[in-house]
Picture 1 (cartoon, rainbow, N blue to C red):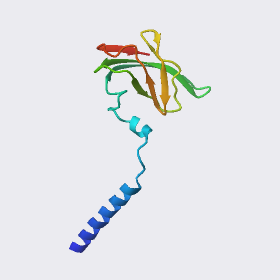
Picture 2: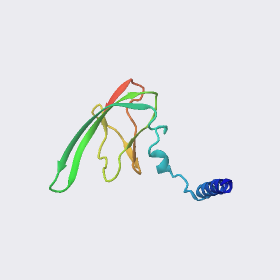
Picture 3: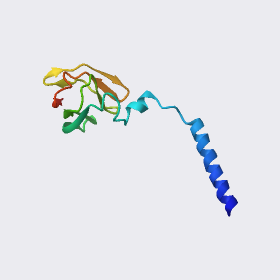
Length: 123
């Protein structure tokens, strides 16, 4: 009985070491996805999503926009918003002004007009 327990423990340990040795390295996309500690996410906190969606059954598409009201937690220079494919961003605005943005995988980054106010609204 003791031998079985030790053999099982030794097998579990060797399996764990083998899995670590062959585990794939974490990519930049992995780092961006799901982490609230990335620079583009940690400085702001959503207080309200104003989601507007139009479903088009004839061509199986959807369209819409999302107004995001958020609280600024600390000054920053870039905001990260995640949007999985096949959804895309065609524009970003803040207070009626267009905001420049770029895409990196499923993460969209923009340069907000201000990041030191207590709250702001995006669309």
